[in-house]
Amino acid sequence: MIHYSNYIDGAFVDGANGEKITVTNPATGEEISTIPETQLDQVEAAIAAAERAQPAWAALPAVARAKHLHELADKLREKVDPLARVITEEQGKTLPLARVEVNFTADYIDYMAEWGRRIEGDVIESDRPKENIFLFHKPIGVVAGILPWNFPFFLIARKLAPALICGNAIVLKPSEETPNNAFEFCKILSETDIPAGIVNLVSGYGASVGRALTESPKVGMISFTGSVETGSRIMAAAAENITRVNLELGGKAPAIVTANADLDLAATAIQASRVINSGQVCNCAERIYVQRSVAAEFTEKLVEKMKAARFGNPLEDETLDYGPMINQAGYEKIVRLLESSVSDGAKVLCGGQRGEGEGGYYFEPTVVAECTQEMDIVKEEIFGPVVPIVVFDEIDDAIAMANDTEYGLTSSVFSNDINEAMNLVEALNFGETYINREHFEAMQGYHAGWRKSGIGGADGKHGLHEFLQTQVVYLQRS
Ligand code: NAD
Image 1 (cartoon, rainbow, N blue to C red):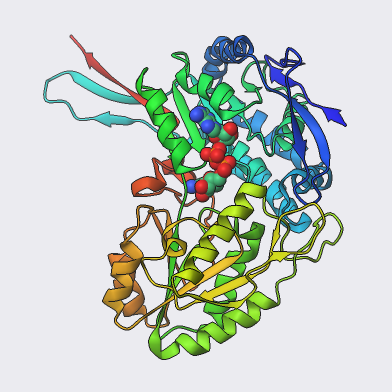
Image 2 (image 1 turned 180 degrees about the horizontal axis):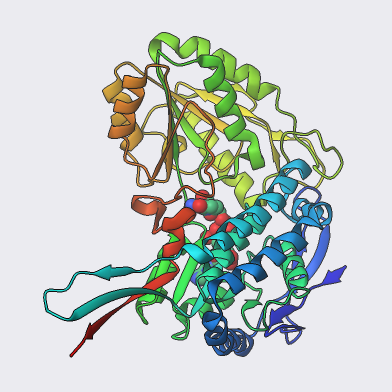
């Protein structure tokens, strides 16, 4: 079994003092690696290395930093297959999806690198004679990147690439569920000319290693993706030093299917949204509101498509639609939400049971009808291949129910009436809305949750600017 070592100041160093965390394959329960539960002095050493290295990195022309990032992206592309295997083995997504994740990660790094020449300041008109006011964008310093397990490889890039192109250094902490891919990422990074200390990786539990990163006065920004509960703890820890936080948290995305929708398209997009990554995706459709006149026809189509989804051990069959749940807790949450919905009067139209598969927590593709807004399954993030359906009569009822949530990440509308669709978009209080397509964002967009789904956002020019601070200079000439 492989044992990974932390990556600090350009070297792989063991940080465990004997304490290790065992990583398992969620498809089989088999133990696949051990990683350090890093001691706090080593977390501090990683932060100190980043702090030492950052000024020289920031002093490079942005185009030189971009060159390093392009080199990294190229090296990742040379290893798509082995990296995809590592991701699938510890996370449970299908191999084709893992390959998409690796390629998307490389493309994302290239995309952010291209911003090097495009970070522009302002020259502002002064009230005084012979004065110029300049606004510069400056790096923040050391960024802590704390990662979840569902798209663990891509999320490295979502934090590292904008941080580095803006002249920051970074300390990454992967999820204890899926750290192996991050160590493999650092192995590849160590073969580039990116200077020592600019990227560091420490592994361990959130309550110890994650917390130490968020409490450090030397960390200028915490970029976190994960649950609302952890996001809230991170904000509290960051408050002590007034550290900037960038939080991408959970979601409970509504999909509204009106009487004017293309029902085949809606059913296809929603099915894809629910089974990709075993339904463990923050931005995917988590609750469906369908108009009464088309509810029966739409539901029938969706049930048919969900039933067709095949699951199993993703390392054994590349043609599967999805794999296991990440762990027992994830599986038990699905069971709890499903059981409580049934006891409150909902009807399971397909699935509803643990799927066969030795050692792993699999769940059948499931459609639950006759749900109401009050049910937990319509309110809480399910994070599994389960679709609850609520029927509505008036569009205003759908809007009210869709907006009735503490989350605000993504939403979608299925309607071929452009007026109806755009009126719905205007009324929906979510950071992202997809019209007549699956839930998935583009790297040049801006992925930012409202309400408890987050603070700030990622991607595109707006996401890039989260990793910068401004300095305004007043020049008085004589
Ligand atoms: P999680 O909050 O349990 O863990 C995320 C990370 O935080 C892990 O690395 C963990 O070790 C660390 N952590 C835990 N406690 C900590 C603490 N006190 N201080 C610092 N770090 C701590 O989340 P998860 O289960 O890994 O991920 C699933 C969640 O992430 C879902 O809610 C999902 O919706 C959300 N998510 C959101 C987005 C988005 O873009 N908004 C993307 C992916 C996942």
